[in-house]
Length: 157
Image 1: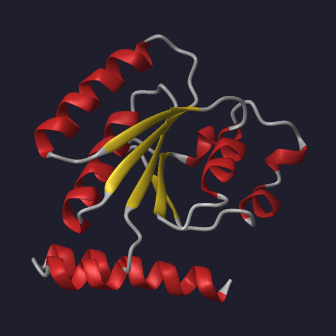
Image 2: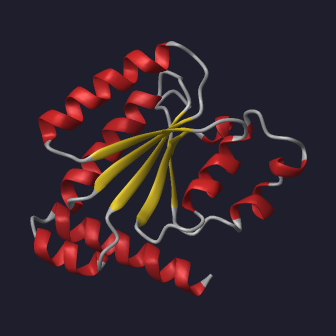
């Protein structure tokens, strides 16, 4: 728990320096942590989460990994739009398709990755999508997450 808190403090400090225009200091604080994981679910608020992740990537000079777990066809159009914007901004990215329980997909993807600074996802309502009863135990499930989780809430909540 102590290591996680230290990493979170480092990331928040780096974001603060980056917002103040001190990009080199922000990069130094991150010491090699260079990825943000955006989890998409195929809902309308994915765009808000994408914008949040994009802004953070620009501020701290990080790459973006996009994990999508939706089976909806609409997600492919949204992904194309996101790719175009990432190219325009010069941000490196990778798209990964996951499946099943969103929490399990996030934990599986991050469990052996020290380069992922934090995970960005839309509202917490979707975190139990396609999860079995055992996986719905939020506290037990998130114990396996090795980085901070940023939940972007829709303004209508």
